Structures are given as C-alpha cells and as structure tokens.
Length: 78
Length: 242
Image (cartoon, rainbow over all chains, first blue to last red; front, side, top):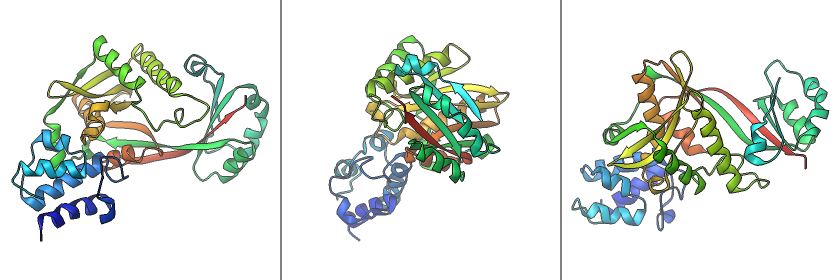
C-alpha cells in the first residue's frame, strides 16, 4: 500500500469522510475533525507509518496539506 | 417551575429577561398561568425537560423558538480516562491560577470571538459584542464570589482557560472553558476538560458536573470520550417580546 493511500485512509477512517473531501481539508472544516478526531488521526498516522510525532508537530498538524510537510520530517514522503 | 428575574441580563444585554425552568412535575396549566408575566419582559428563556411534547407545542404556538438543548454531564473522577496519545500531550501542558494580566488576555480573547456556539451569539437579536460582554461579566461576577480561573500553558504560551467552583463538598463545576484563537486548531481542546479533572482530583473531589450545549458537538464528544455520562437534558426556548 502506498504512503498516499495510507495517509488518505487515516483521514477517511478518523473523520468518517470520503476521499473527495480530502483536498483543502482543514481542522474543524468537517464535524469529525475536532479535538477527539485530531487524536484519532494522529494515532492512526503514527501506527500506519510507525513513527512517534513531536508535540509541536501534533499541535501544528492543522490541514491535510500541512500534514504532508510534517510527515517529511519523519522520512515519510506522501 | 422556577421563575427567575434574570436582572443581570439588563447589564449584559440591555434588556429585561426572565428565565423559567420547567420541572418534571409541572403541568401545562402552570405555564398558561404565567402568560401575563411572559409578555411583560423583553426576553424570555424557558428550559423544558425532554419528552414534554405538550410543553414544546405550547411554547411553539406562543411563538417561542427552540435555540438549543442543554445537557447536564457528570463524571465520577475515578472513571476519568485519556488515550495514550492524550496522556503524552497532557504531560507538556500545565495550568496555573490566573492573575490580572492573564484575565485581561482572557477578556481580549473572548472579545475576538472565542465562543461561537452560545445561544446569545446564535440569536439574530443580539450582537457579537453583547455575547462577549455577557461572558466577561459572568466571569467577573463569579470571580468576585468563590470561583477560580486557571490558564492552561503549553511551552510558556497560554493556550486557553477554565473556571472552577466547588458547588458542594467535593463536587466541582467548571462552568466555562475555552481555547485561545492561536490554539483553536491544535487538537489540545481536550485539555479544557482534562485540567479541571486534575484540579478536582488534587482537591480531593469525587465528582465533576457541567452543562454543555447541543450546538457544540465537539465539546460534547470530548466530555464523553473522557468518561462523562449524561445526567439530564433540557430543551431551551427563547422569545423576544419587543
């Protein structure tokens, strides 16, 4: 499974959304991406890519696009 | 039925206000008896227990508008839970009682739109400025009594606040909490629930209870996720007479 598929799947399963909603997705732009959803997303990404993110990165992870840049720090290229 | 002259709303909102709480034993006839009272004030708020459809219908016929559900939640502190990831983040967020400088920052944050789902802001009859003033006055009133306000801090930066009051021995009521704009999208919102739990545990408490609005599903979710249970619910209707 490619990194992009794994990345997308983390959003889709955490927020119960569809793939067409991913572009331009930001924190609170869908009902599922609140504080509880954010924790679910980060936990899913950490498990999928076998990483442990710094707290600053968890706090900064505010959009679908920004998340791609943050994961590069952990050698995960989307 | 409890009828309260909400005189403080004259200062907060500039209008006369009466708040009515319908209790389970009340009959529709009780509400009909106070019709004259309802017409004498500019703004009326009525809270109805759920499943009292005859009350709901009556209020709707009297041109009251449903504006929110109010959910009373409680937590036995021994049932408080955090996920592993939340525990990691919780370890780097601290809290401390606010001083005057902190309170000034809080009031500034409220004025710039910290609370977006409250029934005053959602009501076209009121302005954002009125809604903010109401919160600020409410906090000031509470601080003049036996309430404390705490700031939450991440890496020396205040991220939000919570208020805290002991309503009965070992029972605590954090009646208001929120995140500052800079951290509103940080995922740290769960701390507005967690830090009051920690303060209650520190004080030897056994229960926390609070009220949340059905207009704010995120706040409801974060309470349930940390172990809160629903105690009771009310429907809230409002009417503007002038």
